[in-house]
Image 1: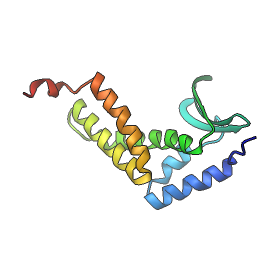
Image 2: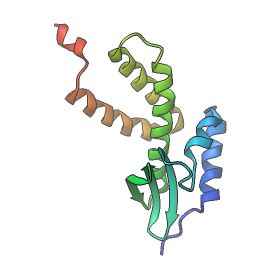
Image 3: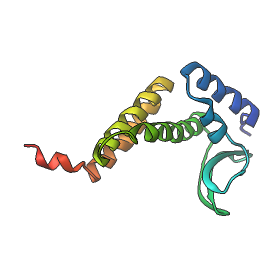
Image 4: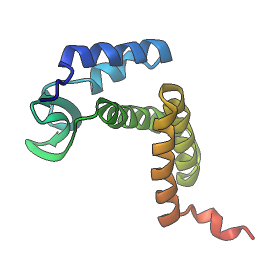
Length: 143
């Protein structure tokens, strides 16, 4: 039987990343949660005999549940959400929707690279897929 990290151990490991990478602690308290304390689509983490669960509930209904036995997978899901939130706040100060996307993608990739270069690569694959299916409008006007 696989031994999973206890919630307090996960919190301690994540807190070290926050401190060493200077991630604002407000995101730690928002995202590193081990009980469904809010029903506002804020993710929370659950650990049981089946593995690590990344759960999003909203208005009393579970919208999403991802399960893994790999702690690095859980950390990727967590930091992908955290860095997206950080990047979205930065992107608010840009002029157009397309500029916001560029800024948001760049800022998120920069944060993920600083946390774990493998996280950046995974996110870049997802972003490339988004851009392939929904390219920025201004790409159509370049020769």
